Amino acid sequence: MVCLKTNPTGSNDDERVQQASRHDLARALAPRYTHASRRQKGQLLDEFCAITGYTRKHALVMLSRPPVEDRARSVGGRPRSYGPAEVALLRVCWSATDGICSKRLAPFLPELLARLRHWHALRHVSAETLERVARMSPSTIDRALASSRAGLPKRGISLTRPGTLLKPKTHMRQRCSGRTPFNGLA
Image (tube, rainbow, N blue to C red; front, side, top):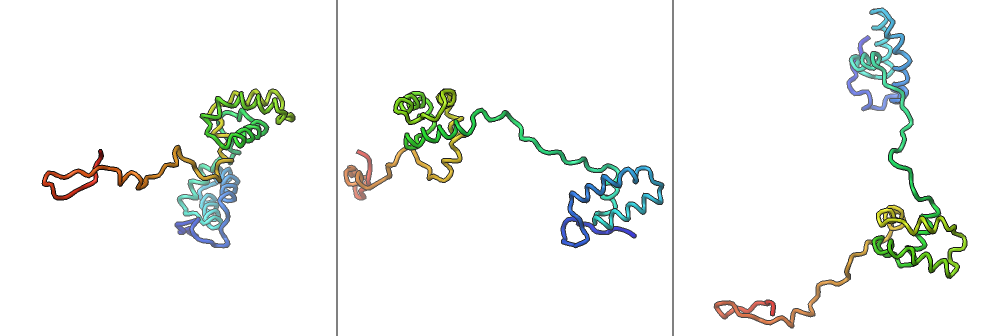
């Protein structure tokens, strides 16, 4: 029996098994394949090809060097510095200031938190949380508020649009020939 299938993952045969199962099977058969005689290796290879749908050469590689077991992937980087309490307080401050940008909010946060505390708007918030939010950098504020800003439309620096109010007030100059007028600056 010879395996001639060239695309083991391309079709939807019922005989085929999922990739994880194929890898499990390769890990299970690899020790037997390593210690088997030449004839037994051929039989194991034929069986493995029939079950998985791999080509003979790929099956040989899989049984010679079985894939390593998948480990749980860990998220790299530093752990988050600010928890949900700090982010919730920051969202309150951000909405109280009508959603100003983080570069303007960061220097204003200590004063804003002091005033909100003075007016008893932050009775349920601990002093440690207030202090941590007051020290947040603009970049950290941007990252913490990213989910809140996701659905909102982006605002630019200015709302001024080009218009026709100045067009009639510009002076008319004549070209060198003196015949065709054109708009120009005063």
